[in-house]
Image 1: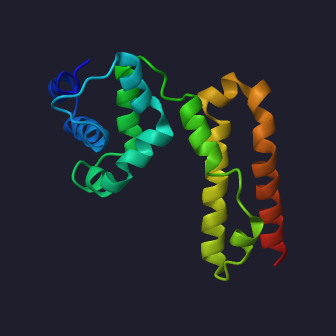
Image 2: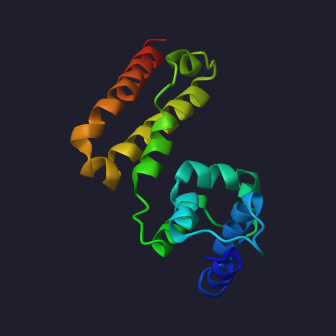
Length: 164
């Protein structure tokens, strides 16, 4: 598919913020006026959440401020465009990477107790988001082992924070 045609379709049929994100993301890697990609390549670029968020990271301020939108909302719309469930393996892997290698010391070294509580709560929220996701629950038998370490880390952090 010609990228110019893809973007034209997005511009005509989706919210302005979705067009902005698609154009911004594609412009980083391609000549959007002249390049073409097959549908699977195009889908892979957008549905791979790590790629999607990394390529849009520099424009997050514009997305939030100008369009008052959230990157996850845009991702959901794009996944719908490609007939892909947004709560997918890519999103799971992205979220897991954000909780898997957390060191308890980084939480416990925070001297201000209110800040420490807030940071611990955010970590817990990230874990709970994974645990409540459709993809995780549909694949719980194979994925639950991957969350043992983050859950134990959270328990350790909470216990140590209460003791101090």
